[in-house]
Amino acid sequence: MVIEFFLLAVISEILGTIAGFGSSTVFLPLALLFFDFPTALILVAIFHIFGNLARLTFFKSGIDRTILVQFGLPSVMMTVLGALLVSYLPQATLKGLLGIFLLLFGIGNLLKKVPAITPTIFRLVVSGGVSGFLAGLIGTGGALRGAALQAFGIPKTKYIATAATIALAVDATRIPIYFSEGFLQAQEVWYLPLLLAAAVIGSLIGKKVVDKVPQHRYKVLLSVAIALAGLLFVVDWLL
Image (cartoon, rainbow, N blue to C red; front, side):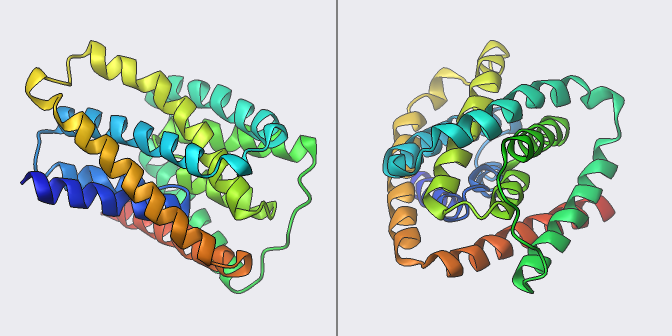
């Protein structure tokens, strides 16, 4: 059980590092094979933090403070607002519509039908705010951040570093709540070093893959990941 759990965590982090999002989306249903929902939720959330810290370490050369401030800060702030409105807006419908958008965006990129957008201050602030708001509203924002940042043609290292920083800030707001609810029990604490090791190993392998993929091919890979995320949202909505 422990070995299987560790290997699944490593694989999830490899995929999440390459795409810049999705490690928790992949790992949560897998963790549910081993734990009840509250325990799986907090272990995956902590694993997500470990993974983003590892990505920031391995991709630190890509950190762009201008993008972080102009895109990341509005994103984090609007995430809070979106989370506050969860009870008042139809999440399932919004998630389905977002899925359609992501699916079309990913396919459009693959067909080279989506024009590059110049990253002005106004556009970065607005796109960061919108993506953050929707992330707070539907509970997941990695694919949407990926779509927004890809539209600006941001290089892969800057994109991954930016996405990891924003995700880390969002995680920092939810982890204390999970702890206060008693989701993590004493008998599961020993899994944390295991998850840390899996996050570091997975991020390192993912970085090696990203380093070997040319920028133009990475854009294709990211477009596929965004389209698949959108497809999953649509399928979940319809079912």
